[in-house]
Image (cartoon, rainbow, N blue to C red; front, top):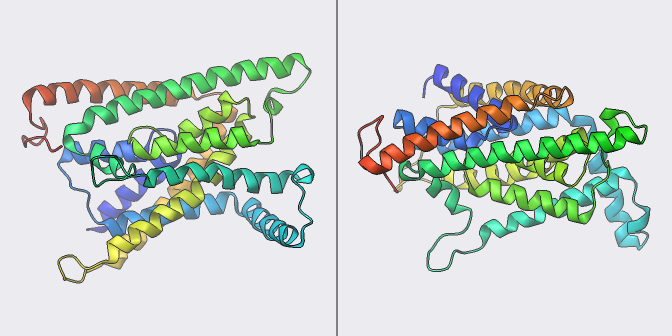
Length: 317
């Protein structure tokens, strides 16, 4: 892999990982259009670590506070001093993040009649023959963003009537139902390439009446351990010898790609927070709808012909 390719992929990863357009969906589309295979798995892992660094950079102070609260909470649990009803905001957030991660274990459930788990469906749906799944999933993302945005407008209207400022509209503390709802949404987004993780979890929080900025912060923080876990699992496979041959790694493009993903990801998070605060989510609603429709039309044509119209090769299922 050359440096230019590493930079391009780092930019794409950094942008699509955090903007509500689905990084997995765009990756599947690019691979389909250009006839690319999955590529260097180790490089993919490093890009994810780069985007993880972006989250930690944006939320560094909050993450430190949450880690400290988690440690003190464990101490209180061990000494019998922990009380659910007396949790402060930081402890509440720690607990709700943990609860929100529980649904991800569903991804390891086996699919009856196959040797696959639910998480394996994501890779299967990324194949040529399932491009229509990516297109439909992008349409689902557009719909979720629209519904979440509409619900937030009603929340703002409700709180404004009560004399609150628009930016303060919505609840600011998650409860168990909120966390599980967002967690299940993240689980579904992990299965279907095209359903944006950040966009769908934001929408789920908005459905529950949460403040939109609090909801976005929760979404990014919830994604941090998920990205880390995925990176660890993929790293094991990436470093395993292929057919007994040790994998050769060119570290310079990987490092450059990782740094690029981190820098672009940092600004993508800032951009998303600004667009959300200025009520410009229509940009993503329209974009995902248009791209989704185009991909669905292309996939229908290809399914009728039985070939990838861009590469001329037979569809792979």
